[in-house]
Image 1 (cartoon, rainbow, N blue to C red):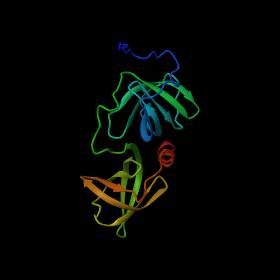
Image 2 (cartoon, one colour):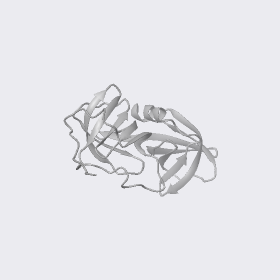
Image 3 (spheres, rainbow, N blue to C red):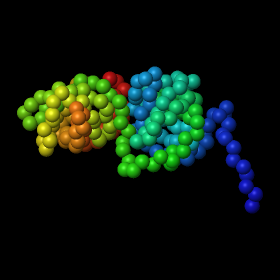
Image 4 (cartoon, rainbow, N blue to C red):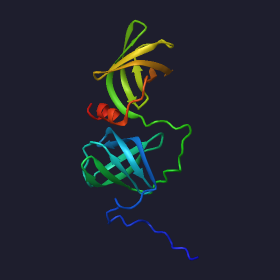
Length: 191
């Protein structure tokens, strides 16, 4: 059996019809001009990704993206069709090369004033990042452990959150139920 040598794909052609290595529906973070947005990753391969999300993006833009606990990948926008768009990585990236364990959901940088209502008190803070199942807040005073809390950020109220960890002036809270990717995108992208 003769092997056919593999070569890099021809990026001058429209690759939307080419099968991707992995199809998925997971939250991802896209940075465009220094601002972070939540989008849904639809598929990915070593050479690029397809996404869905209402973000200010145009063909030819250079962006950074990541998902889970992986590092950012620099890519160029190859096509835009409504809320769907495709990126070509500047360098091939092996999606299986950095399998972090345990998997962490992507954290979306998110800076907004926050109020934590816990044990009959109100503690001021500032949101640092948010994910589908939790958020990190910089607090001005110690947050008492072992109590359910309510957190208000940007007019949105998260009830029955649980303090999971503290590190210095940062506190990590678990949400009582995960946010859907569209809800997370609406909350972070419209801020």
